[in-house]
Length: 418
Image 1: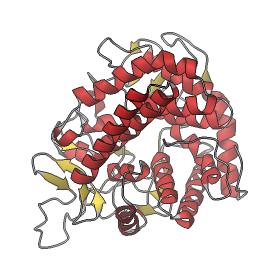
Image 2 (image 1 turned 90 degrees about the vertical axis):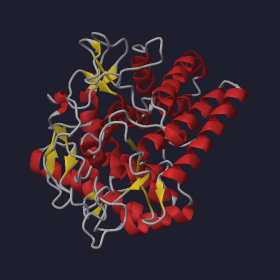
Image 3 (image 1 turned 60 degrees about the vertical axis):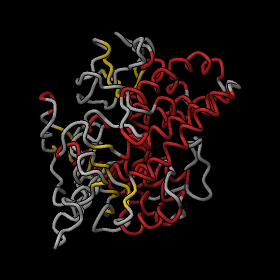
């Protein structure tokens, strides 16, 4: 990793991340055949691998010269794959595939992880070994989670990892098509094309690229709300995107931005938006302090939503699983992964100064947590920066100090896009 900043807040974040990285490394144990990373070095989430947490953690280790952590992650996940292609989203050292929700398929990051790793290492022998399993894993997503219009849906929206994201809380299962899932699947398809190319499988490479392009077109057709100028969830009951409470005939601003939530930001990260779309959305919503931009990063729900709150725990879903009555809150607080996604989107669409400012604010909020507690938590109050939940947190937070490497003049170790 190349350090590009020397501010006190950056150095505080960087030094802490460097200090805790060895604490989350574990040898193979129990049901895990390979070494693994724990999400915290405290009591929260110990002994588990979570597909999207661990994907992002292994990126940080790879940037620090340990790309094998990426291979271990994928190999551990694939070791629990069934004959159908299904892989549990959460696996446990104690009892293996232990996802708390039936049919909770591994979130769509495995192909991206494999593509980034193999590009970094040129380990084509490993790619050849895992490619058939990754094909089955991705086919499971595309077939078992298929939705109208060539899109896919979370069977329960909180399967996204945005636990109590507002559409997951309010709407019944199977009625919402979320833009985040389809953006992730777009990146997975392009990553599979990259892997196929490494294997000189031209037919598979072209097939995945064609599927990716079709999905991109469907996202821009169905998830883009031209009236509001933003991506949004598609409501199958309403038959259109859902930003406001009603169908757009409100006589006041009440409920106008009720469902303007963080899944809308992921197509920007995935580089799906056309430049004019992206600039409109970024200026009007992403950088607008009345919507996503907080002094501490990117809020997980628009500040102008009536549902916006910074509670430590989110309200349980109306249609949720009884084992998930308390959830970390994605209805307002700032999360480091959202900062990370938006940071890369800003850079791609030409907002370099704004990306640098977002990186600075990310270091600021982490430094505040370290000064107050001596460790990071997983989310932060969007208005005050107060650290909210999960002591001794590592997970995707450890990506933060890579941000300067992607700014102009930096030397990023990882290519995240294919």
